Image (tube, rainbow, N blue to C red; front, top):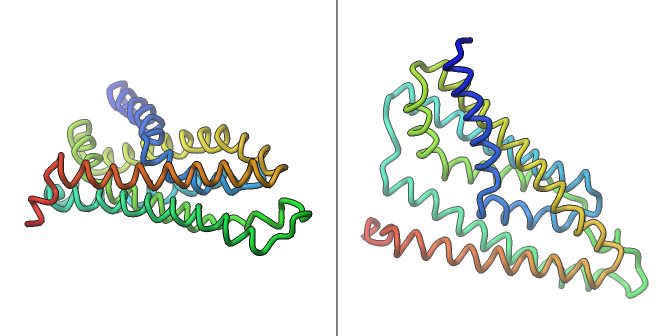
Length: 221
């Protein structure tokens, strides 16, 4: 591997870590990490998000690189819009889960009766959606930095590894206060409620920004 390619891959790895910490990524995964009663569960939520995100980027990225094509702006913004819808859904679902679990719990029950067993399929799906939304930018970045399909594939994989590690670190750190709060029912439910509300509000803002400021609604019309 020559020095130039190594430098490009190193940059891709660093950009992958940074990419994982974008607001919409962080907020979406936080809704799942907030309901983890063990730290390793929160960490795995980040890992599965990274796997889903990388898989989508890799598949779509390679297809577009081979075809030497790009995603039209209308479809690119529409895929981004799906992220906003997903954020609202995750936020509302998190808030409703508190009410549902309270009905199923007694006042003196231990907190493990309050928290459901985590489902990592949801994290995988969130990563998949984020990968769809970010595929256009990823392809443009890849095509501008590499000179062959195999280099493009390697770059996307290294970038993906960076996103997995970045999200693993984030969900581990953010999971600490949530896990500690699970010792107290009220504190745990308040944190989940706050995370759900933040996800919902940010989701609506995200959709508004894409639709109005970025002109997606005009493209639809």
